[in-house]
Image: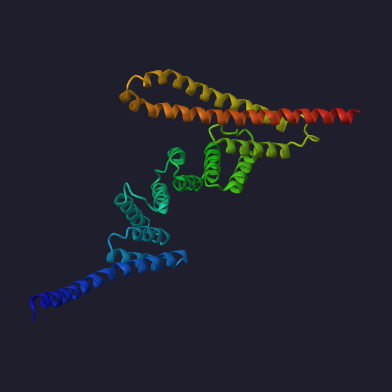
Length: 320
């Protein structure tokens, strides 16, 4: 046999020997993914013991399949094993630090920790509400809703805390594009707490919707023919519009002034430009937001004025 032919045959044999272990090595990973998929199905169907067992088996086969820890933690919580579920989800979030995570993990961990704190008598409503607000600012809506749910599960909740939780829940639903749910929550808010006010920190579209629900609730509670001394929707729109416009244009004016002061200095050198252009752009963006909020306020003012004009015209017509 020639040397070249021998090398070809030997190479083929080595290839077969190397391919076999590789295929065998790939099988556990495929099996792990299959078991995790089945565990997800079991969890969705309410078969929590099977879900926990399947997820545990999947992670044992493939330690890089971090999602198995989430499914196991979720299932353990449903089985009443709060401490084990908490440890599992904390491990998952630690491993995935700096990486994309399953949003169910953080939200469920919030609820678990709240349950444990409630059992220990250490649950703090104010801290939970503050955490919900921070989560909304960070666009972590799932965690925010979990904090809110933990607060609302508290017994003997103070009225001001219940009002704040309801307002935050509506804000979270609006950010999730759940417009109908958000409006329903605002209606409930104004019906339960007549002194509640529209939050000027919300996006312009949310401010408008919240003001509309406030006006609708107050109009239904104080019909003109039974209570002529109640606040009119037009007056509410005027008040809210004035406040919103003043706030928005004040923010815009302050940001514009900051831009005027900082821009000449940016032209001194390239280094100064690189160091300061980020702040300049941030001020420009804030100015745009302020203008948008101010414009929403002007629109509300206009709606209130038009409503007053129409109402007065109707009164004059009735008198004639």
